[in-house]
Length: 369
Image (cartoon, rainbow, N blue to C red; front, side, top):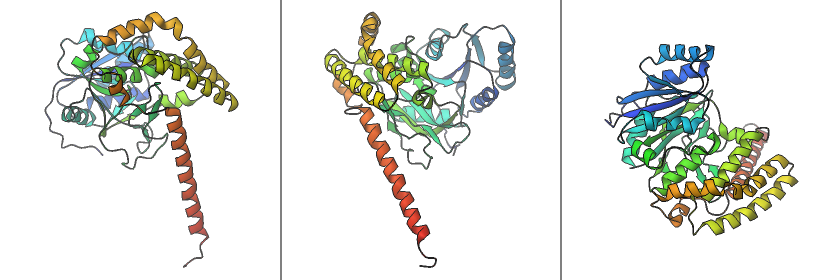
């Protein structure tokens, strides 16, 4: 599936991988990174936690074996993925070139960065992301970007566990690409201030991409670039057992909407969000998802406590905003993403039922008829 014919000579790319812990996956991820066919690639490895102890020594041993040419920096503690990535703003000088941000459990196909850089220039995009597939089964799509409504509720373009039959292989503008792997123009990353340090890992891709859109830059998915991803945050967020992750992501979503909606949009958006939250709370309670209902309700009701933070974030975005609310709205799903997801699931179930019925008829038909 790789394309070795990419001969584009592009700008320097700094691949920034945030390493949280060691494991067999780290070896594969580093090997894949070192094996990229892009000539102007530099590797920066940011290690969270202390530089002392057995865990740190194990990580350093893996790096020395697999990526001895990489630049390594210890960040200390566990600041989170977004704040860790922001360290590149101090470590790498200048506004030219590109940053490729990576989780430590992402293994890119050899031509992934080449494909991303080529399409970034061809599409004049600010952010591009690859097709993410599952770590143990590259025939299953994990992400090809997501749409979002004005309430910050995202809708993935590929269904969970969808088989890759090249049905999502068109390059297209999307509202969100996964922060697990994305290439960003360095000047754009500096302009928008990097990832928001107040937003958790589960919500930083929505917040970051939304701010990129407000700056007037495009966000594009490049399916020709492929990367295996060991974990699926989307699955964790749909699992009611991941209570802390769900609660944090809901709080971040509400604050992102309040921070990035324009002044003219804000009253209507918050009013509609309140009604939608009440309806969702009732539906979730009726269907036995009480914890999820409580998370969504508390997230909205907590907004008054975040007024100072939201005001500061709005002030920062105002400095580079070049797209008004109607322009952002044109990129978002009309109505509610919850309805879109519901209708898509019903259509998928109906399609599966029809396929099974057809199969049953064929199998029941007399042999040789």
